[in-house]
Amino acid sequence: MRKKNNPLEPFRLTSGTSSTLNWLGEQGAFSSCIDYELSGSKLTRKTVSGNISRLKKDDFIQKEGKRVSFTEKGRLVYLKLKIKKCGLLPENEVCLVVFDIPEKERRVRKFLRDFLGSVGFFPIQKSVWLSMFNATKELNEYFRAVDLGDKVLAVTAKKE
Image (cartoon, rainbow, N blue to C red; front, side, top):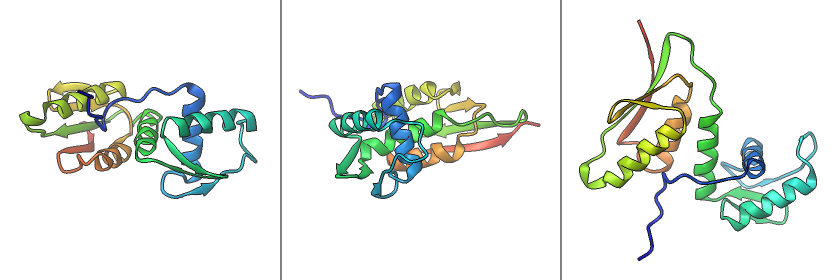
């Protein structure tokens, strides 16, 4: 029996394809179909062309001619990349993630914990995770994208 894909499962990208995916997201491919141009980019045409072919083959993007848009899988990976790029919060603030996922969905809980660990969080309790990264907005966007917005909450809290 085939293992069902879980939206929280990590995706493996090379540094080149992740750079191209990130670049496409910054150009607007996350929310709409864009025409991509390389002017002003540090990426070479050959590099981008090869990476776009790989991203399309791996179902991260849809491409017709020079028009590109993210697939659902590509959106999730792009959001994860955005989370990993977040800077540090001020010294007296932390990012907290709190979740309440029922026992019958333990696979989702495990993947959520693995995901949080992979983006720099550590557990305070089994369902409360903490980080010094300023990723609240990106995390909540990710959780909504994987239909966990009603079960998971990311907040920025001030330490007194």
